[in-house]
Each structure stands twice: as structure tokens, then as C-alpha cells.
Length: 375
Image (tube, rainbow, N blue to C red; front, side, top):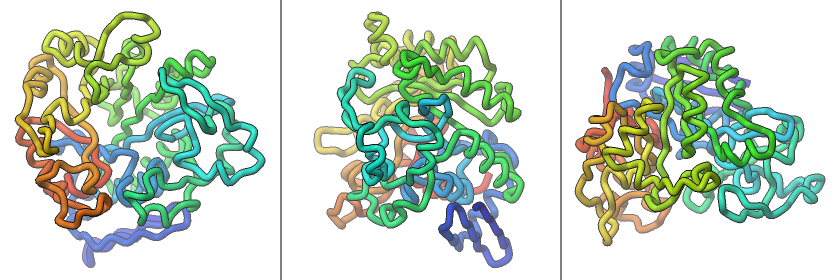
């Protein structure tokens, strides 16, 4: 069930999604969301990472809906596949960390160990479940020790399909009177392709059938792999973003399979960025590519990555900006030493904005929206 009520005079937002009610008293949010009709108009671009995942369990309709009412320009679902070829939104294909699958005795025999992108993982995997079976599960908070408030919503939300997310966005666009972008990531592309469950064409077909067809559409498709982005470049005009792992010595999973030797470090050089620009519109690096951390966990000096990417014609959207001490540089952490305590995310963001980034992925999208202000 989805209900959204706005009252610009009193400055409240009532949001009912999936059985919970969220109330915001920010008149600024209403002013922001009703004043702009183009998510690419305001800079920097605010991408709600897995929705408003700092407030509601990630990759749920509630998380995406709250992010939109907070003023995010784009919502970001990670996409994986079911056994019967449905696109669903989970951070990974392993279900144990983000759903209550372990509480379903009927699925106990699905538990297994397998290698995904070179890493051995044990758990329950989406490719072993039909969509109907996935719909019997409920989402849970992935990092309950850091976000205990989110964990109180365990069991409230279903696992959404890609189409359900698009439907939600389009319905809230009507009430918000603005366009809202969708920014999916294809997860484990080679893994699913090797299982006969390739996602790329299905993602494109789903976007195209919903009216997202050209580079001016409010949509991106992202991947940590290289080959699938080059494949996507041939079948769609939608904007593509090359993601970069934090470890520069690591290789994209498809490049490991191909034996090319290409690393994310190679792809971050001026020459590497020029090659990326042949198929991608933007790059999504771990934020350490832009400003690395010192040994004492304080922010270091900005690198030339943004300048080099801009010289190649690429936008730069780093990830992930989070408000909890566990993720912040030392100088922006709260005086409360608890890892779950919230520090000065706005201070960290300002440092990156000064470094010239064009957008950012944030678990608390209201913070970058607030420091950006009306545009």
C-alpha cells in the first residue's frame, strides 16, 4: 500500500508504504521537491544509495519512497535475478543478510556454499528461488549493530521487483510534481550470465518499455564490470556508469574471467579514464579515489581523479557517504564514540564538493539535499 500526503502550508509529509507511517516536518523538503522538474538540473546530483537506507532497511519500497520525499534526485536499486528470470532488488544475490530466509524452514535445504566473483560465500541465493518464493520473504536490516533503529522495521517490507520500483517512482512523481530518476546497478553480471540468467537485455527492455529510452531519460545503468557496460552501449542510449572497487589492484570480475589483467587502478589513470569514456557517461569510484584517508583515518589531500575524469568528459559520482561514526573520517565523527553514533556527514560532503565531484551516493540523502539547498 502506498499513500503520500503533502501539506506545504504546515510543512508536513505523511508517507505510508508497506504498512509503516513516516512523518517529516521539513517544509524545506516540500519546497525543494515541488520546485524542480528535472533531477539533472540541480547539482550536485543526490543519489539515494539503496534508498534512504540510513533510516529504513535498504532496497525496500519504504526506503525508496522516503528518499524521494527527502528530495533525492535518483533512487538506486541493486538488481539481481531469480530462478525464473525476474529482476529483484537486493544488494547481493545472497539472501541471508537482508531477508528473513533463515526463519523459513521450508527453504533450509537451499542453503549452500558457492563462489561468486571469486569469493566463497555460504547462504541462500536468489538464483535458487522463484519470484513467488522470494515474495514470501521479508526484508531485514543488513547492519543492525550500526542501525538498530532500522532493525525495528525487520519483517515489514517485501523484496521489491525492478518493475515495482519503477511503478513507485512514477506514482510519487505525480504527487511530488517532479521527475525522479532511477539508477540501478547490475550485480554479479558474469555470474548470472554463466547461469543462463543474463540481466543486461532485461534491464534495458524494462527501462525501454517504461518510457526510459534515451540519454535525456532520467536513468543510469551501473556496473563494476566492463564487458556488460560495453554490451549495453550497443543496445541502449541510456547513460552508463563505470563503478570502481576501493582496492585499485582488484580486477572487474569479467576481466578476471577473460584474463586481461585490467585493474581498477589501470582504469583510474588519465589514459584509463579516456578508455572508459568511450562507453560510459560517468564514473562511480569509491570515495577514496577522490580524497584518500590518512593513516590516522583523517581525510588526506584530494587526488587528480576528478580533474582527470572531467578531462576525459566523464561525470564523477563517488560512493558511499554515510552519517555514522563507523564510516566517517575521524575529524567528522561524533564525540559519542559508539560506531552507530551520527557525526558530521555534512562536513565530509563539503570537502568532497570542494574537490569538484558532480554527484554522490548517500545513505542519508536529506543531508546532501540540505547542504545543496534550493536550486
